[in-house]
Length: 298
Image (cartoon, rainbow, N blue to C red; front, top):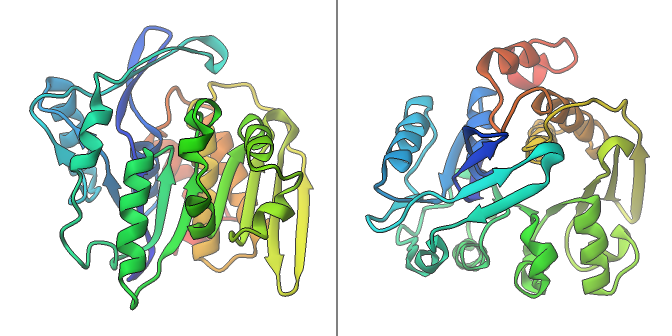
């Protein structure tokens, strides 16, 4: 297992924002941004053989994202996520890609031993179940499991908020709306109660209000809430950038409150671009900020 290494599981999609197309998908953007920040990253997602799939696959390969755990099928197309102003989804076309998730096969018994963190970024429940089964089948390696249920948990909480997923996770990320929905569905009133089910850290982003983090500190459960200065921007991918920053901080042995500061700064950077993938020049500038450069061994 390598430290500073992440495998993200979820979707690669085409985001259409105000009529313009961008490579997107929470898991794919997580892998690209992590790689550009100097991490070793892999992606578990589905691709087709259509032109957009080929272009996206080649883009990821060129950057250096490990696609050994992604699969290509000739009969599918990349999903398209239509986003209009203020991040209100106009529509989602998945081209029936979900029917192919049962065919994902992690035949390599060492598939997950090379990564220090497995991050489920709005991943399909079938993928989560298969990966968790493989992880717990291997008694010699236990990566950190990070879980962002994502917006589909609002529609299908019985599928995306299974108790097994919660118990297996070390860290769970929600936005405000997702947390409210999860707390109602799970019949809990506070992140502390969620931690009692298994996770060590629960993070809730609150949009312009800031963020809240609850974590286990020895025998205590601590909750800290921080306000941030509101920044106007295109919010697609900001939550995923926040999760990436937090995980990078934790991998560098920062305490949870300090790790969330990294996450908040990276989320602010994501607000300044359209789509979830941050421009390389902005990433490079971020890496050399005095406060963070030690995280990237600079």
